[in-house]
Length: 235
Image (cartoon, rainbow, N blue to C red; front, side, top):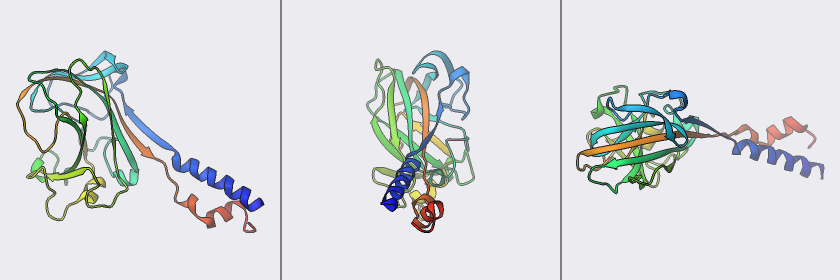
């Protein structure tokens, strides 16, 4: 009975450890923008009210086929080796206050690897996932959560797609998901599908609460030898 009780207690402790998750949130409070988020022109601004709640990131004059919100290259928290960081999800609150001609395309997330040449997009490799439809004018804030299968060793996880600087629909030869997930040099959120083109039009969009979640884990905790070391060899 002693063995059963101690084992049960330890399993519960291990389960608690495995379930622990940590998050980092960019909510722009106080006018901060630690990851250097940008929509790509000089109209980026941080508004002090109207966010979800409080401060939020806003661009009211984007002329493009689809807005792309991206952090700076190699930004802390949002880039790096997603597998070793055990990234499990990325979420964002988005809004579209004006779309000149309208759009019903899906919101997408893109993980970009620059291969050491940031700014030379022909050298890039990337993987992306498309989610629900972009926020529409009048809807206000809309929440999006993208699951990141960072521990997958598949060539491309189900629902994801790969591309490169010269072909947004296919990885270049010899590249797959495993090359991207361990070398994320920039995170991007698209109000668009990365493999599509569309009408150039005027957009007014915003973002808040950009969140990356890391799942805690302890492989050591799951071994019987470690249990005996903690509770005694006579178990």
